[in-house]
Image 1: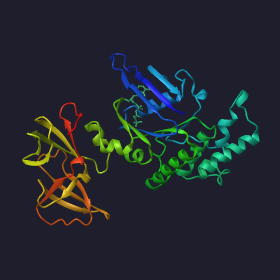
Image 2 (image 1 turned 90 degrees about the vertical axis):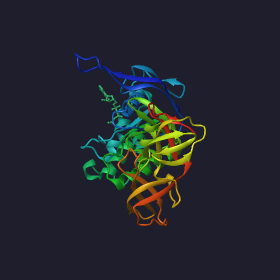
Image 3 (image 1 turned 135 degrees about the vertical axis):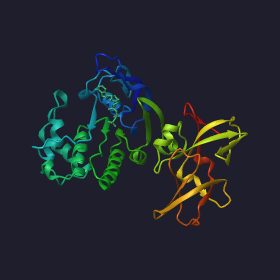
Image 4 (image 1 turned 30 degrees about the vertical axis):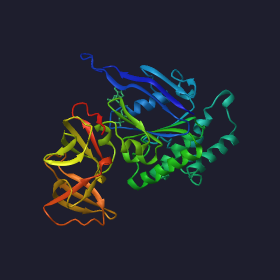
Length: 363
Ligand code: ATP
């Protein structure tokens, strides 16, 4: 099921009678989520991710704009009538019910033509449980399950009605690091197996990048960029997106373009023919540095951190906006114990941004 958001807007009125400061939580969103894809809604706390998800679910009414499921305008439909499955951060299972009863619960409330007999409900509950691999735990109570197992029950409960759209709001936040990794792979597997269009809200860029077909990056209610994770990482539209994606994060410098050359401090580091003379913000991905004794960029070497497969070179430079520069190089790279380290740069890992608007300047 394709999902289309058309000029979707949500404004919360001011809580304070004295001030008229309303909150524009979601500002004029227009984008299309193709059928059967997993989309990661990504951005820092308060950027409007959950509000977007709740409007798609019907739990919150938009102030403006429309939502379509396929060709149907569902903007005015109640959540029950949209055919959605919703999973929250806190699994919200009924503690007094068994796993089986929890999963069957949404089916018991179906009315009219959708009403099911007990055997069909049981069969559907077992199908959903099998999909998330908890069919052997059906008679346990939620308190007898691990966090990851509880979250799987919540996913099975959302799947049992065979929703057209699955909505996940930070579903992994309560899990420890190892379980997060495992469960996110599970979610991807389940999504691929069922082919259900899925929207996944997270503030964790790595999580979104690793499982999404497409990511939507948001900031203060405004859509910044939408695309395949690798494309957005390799081709960020602005400095915010460049900084938000990537671990370790992108290194940012105060630079200047003069006569088609990029200068960081006094180092002339790159040819940027075609770019007009101006001051620029420069983003360099950690993997964009090459240790090179004849390289044009000279940095003060702080230390070298061994990370197994790679080596992280920690250094400083007069033009850096961050206290240190982190560059990731191959573990075989020879780095002399010296006061300075010299780098050349991979041009496709270097991005220029307008100092005021922070929009990308292409070269
Ligand atoms: P988080 O990751 O912290 O959950 P989020 O990106 O999901 O954040 P939202 O919960 O969608 O952000 O909130 C977006 C903005 O709308 C925030 O500024 C928030 O304070 C505001 N907001 C959310 N719900 C309400 C409400 N019911 N009344 C007033 N303001 C609200």
